[in-house]
Length: 440
Image 1 (spheres, rainbow, N blue to C red):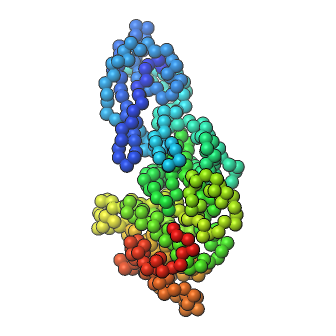
Image 2 (cartoon, helix red, strand yellow):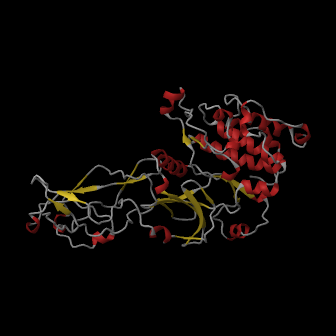
């Protein structure tokens, strides 16, 4: 007959507060391990188990080893199984600090069931009802404690995530929360893509890139708290206006190129630049008080009063990467593993199943700029860009300056080695000669 032994969790906490820096503003939990103490006489017949405390419930348990609390020896820093850290804003200057990630579901006292081996040997544990929560996860209530979801509307959705509007309870700041359903991450590649997205977005802090404010992870979801763009997407603005004046197109394109320049300098290729991922927002920023709130509620706000920010780094790639050299012969070229991005904004090298790199982002900018000026895309269907150059019909392009056509033509160069780099695009004379309505 099986021998049932109950072991109540009355050990001291194995983890103490402490963090170790791993560089680039990322911190990991620093762990300490206890020296195992001899079992008490009352439990001499039962094997000794180490118990890890992960919540306030365990700390309320009576401890029989409090006298030995000084018998600690420092172990190596524990790297948690999940690579994400939770971050919080501390003030209006957008400074970040590490959020406490010791908020996990309180574990019940663990009941360990033991049964004898059929051969009469040592006992082995059987699963019992308990909470197997990663100690670095937080409780779902930790998210709703700080944020209130606004209605049932969604700002966007994807294969495994939805983006919802929310309000920070402490100061009423409007944010967008990307909720990733971890159960839909079926492959290791999908899990790695989410991990890469978070790591990339955390280190990209630029006025033309949507800011990632906080990261929460629970047992079932991953929450990415970002600044909310209050005026939809560039796609929606294009559908409303159809085409932009040359000066306005220059202003918006200049901001897009500046964001891409920062990404490329940081070793990131976006791989999915498109109007849906360019978000117009208030030029004054989300933390400027009443004036920002007033413009955010004004549906007639003019495009001249906006700035644009890039978002969605789910397909982004970090370069250079020495692993690429084996497949492409260049650490800056990503091996082709299938079409990446949105079809209407893909570069010819992707349609040709060739390795790709930073030039794919500049091609996408060329498509967007062509669309902002003319009101339509240069290639239909998009795959004909492999064999045919972009057309600059005189009837349409005579309305625009020669500098505008020159920049678009160099961005839509089919040969990626001859295509404009982000530095060349940023310093193009069109941005200097175009008449900006307001300084940026």
